[in-house]
Each structure stands twice: as C-alpha cells, then as structure tokens.
Image (cartoon, rainbow, N blue to C red):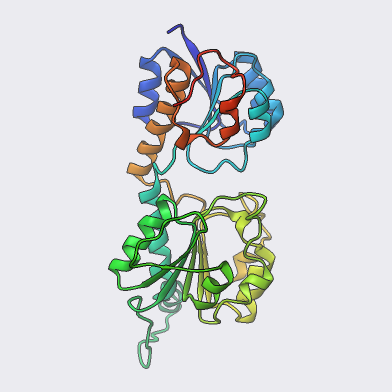
Length: 333
C-alpha cells in the first residue's frame, strides 16, 4: 500500500509493534508529552494522519476532525472513556480496542493488591521500618476462605476468578451480560455482591451508567472489614466517599491503580490514608502485556488501513458499521 502516517498519543509503543508498522510502510509521529487535545489536533492536522494510536490524552472532536485522511482510531488498551465515540461514529471512523491483550498483567496486579491488603503488607512494613516489632500477639487473615466479589466478568475478571479460586477463595460475580461457570456464584445485584464480599474487585468499563457506581451509599453496604480493589477505571469510584469510608472505619482498606483525575492532585486526600495502596495506572504494563497490547493495537490499525475485515469484537462503536465509512477501504466481518 502507499505510505501512510499514524499519530501515537504518547512517548512510545512496543519495539516489535513499532517495527511492524515501519515494515508495512507506515510513518510514525509520536506526540511525546504534547497530550492536550489542541496539541494532538495540531499534530494530526499538520501530518494529515491516516490513523491514531491512542495511548494517552483526550481524543475529542477537535482531534478526530483535524485530519481529512483519518480512517481509524486504534486504542492501545481497552478503555475508551477518553475518546469521543459519538464524534468518531458520525465521521464513519471505527474505534478499535486491543481487547484482552494485557488481561494477564492486570489480573496479576489485582491478585497482588489482594495479597497486600489482606496480609497487611503496607502497615507491617512501615512498623518494622519505624523500629517496631509487632510479632507478639499478631494474628493475620487468611486469603483461603474469603469471599471475592468481582464486578465485570470480561477477560480480566475471568483470570482473576481463576487465580482466586486456586487460592481457595469463594468467588461471586456481578455482570448481567456474562455467562458464569458453575463453580462461581452469580450475584443477583451489585448491592448483594457488596454486602456479601470480603474483597470487592472492579473490572468493568467506565460509562455514563457506571460512573461513581461505588458512591457513599454503595460503600456503606460493604462489610467494615472488607477491602476494595480497582484496577479498572478511576471514575467507577467516588473518591471523596472512599476517603471518608476509609477514614471512618466503614471500610478496612483499598488498593487503587486508577483515579478520577490522572495524575491525582498533590493535595489529594488519598495520600494521607494509611490503609490504602496506590499505583500509577500501570497494572497492564507488564512486559508481556505491553508487547501483546502493542501488537494487537497495531494489528487492528493495519487491518483498517489495508482494507482487511475488522473484527467486531474489537469495535468500541458498533454503530459505525452501519454508516458510510471515512475510508472506502473500511469493512467489517
């Protein structure tokens, strides 16, 4: 095919993924730290890019409309909450996700969070560093036998359930659309899952409907000795309500890999809480996960640019399949 150009909204992609683009005659423009929507729109317009690989930044209508040649948006990951799907759909531009590519990495991070919370790693580590020796009389909690509640049973949720079951946890799932194996309890409602779980782990997408699904009233349903884990999207949790629940003892602890605003403000109240573990939205950034995401993302993009049928399972805006595409080469399975 004739040479194409692609904007990557970030510093880099996996080396193997980059090499594949280059070998296919695609010129790569890296946005680097220029991640404001106006900056991304300017880059897209300057280079009249055929595709955008979305790593960071808000992809609003300005960005989507900036290049007359734009044919596809390929998400480097699965979450599309920062992409204006309606604007893309109106222009006939498919938005493709690297569905499940880094699921193993995110699941491992989730299990690590569960260990850290249940085994009290953070406060015990700090106690030893402070010269204390809280061994006499200390009795910890076992992971085996605890009830794990999983909200969202996609690729990550399923892997977390497998690992948790192997650890001896009882697993229940809330996901109205999912088929759940016989060895897992299908919770009838989110409220029932929250009330019955020792650990609640979030693995669902962020949508208008799921925004702040764990607000003050939802958190109040959880056991006082329960833990919350979020390796999905920060907007699923009302952070102010979470801070209050952790301060008041309504909730025993939490572990977050994503936040309502990223990066969080320096004065965010989360920093002062002793019963929370925080990581900078890197749950999916394991070596194998990053390579798999990069290759999947680039594969989706090349399918669009080469006129190969696009997989509907990866399509974040399915309505676009019924409209006139931005490029005559776009087609679907």
